[in-house]
Image (cartoon, rainbow, N blue to C red; front, top):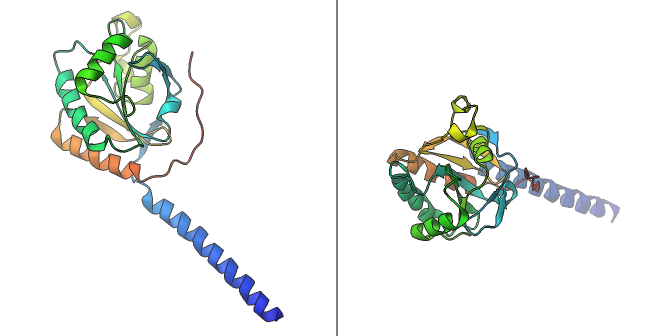
Length: 214
């Protein structure tokens, strides 16, 4: 009887070890091989509805970030036509979000961004349009997302201007992953879609909600 009890305990421990090992292996297997470039720093901006949006709202979601301005007649219309393609491909994924920042906040108020979002047919549950402090928006572009070279910054923020066609990809834990994606090139859009699919399979491993900048 004593020997049978030992066998049962041994078997239970063996099963528990198997499940722990399987869980760890499954999590490792689901990890994308995309390298980590940086981490999204704390921020606070306004979305198209005038509501506060922070870096904490990105956690738990795979995000694609871009910069544009609503009156742009150059690269922005084509960029956002391509972003709409990305959005349409993943809009039914609860853990997916497009984050579009204005690079001309002195013009792009929340109501103007709202009108633009309607024009794009965007649902603000998975595509937000952000405006706010120009200095903080530009710092995010350069030092968090890596969408513009920090060397391009000028001493007077009013003279500074970012105009980039690149997209950044952020994982569920707030890490910027992979490289930058050219929003005007079809092959890079397809690569972005593949990389989004890979990150959607990953687990959110942090409960950190961040502290935003005032």
